[in-house]
Image (cartoon, rainbow, N blue to C red):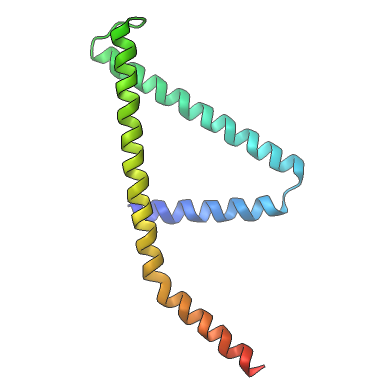
Length: 117
């Protein structure tokens, strides 16, 4: 599952970079604004989820205990994100290692064709 996710993310990033290279300044600004909006929406969704979790635990909104619950839940979310990021990096490295022989073969083949011309 992570390999598919990683591959899709890589393709999306590559596509975005290619499109950004061809985009006008207005298009790039609109894209950046959309990215900021999506990040804000994700942050709001995270806060809503954490708030719901703390309420389910029985904490009352506006209390010190509720604020501490939110802080601890956010810290745990950050830890989980860091773990997922590290796993993604390891999987990305595994993919790079797996494709290295193909990349090296391609480079060698190109060099051979250059020498023929």
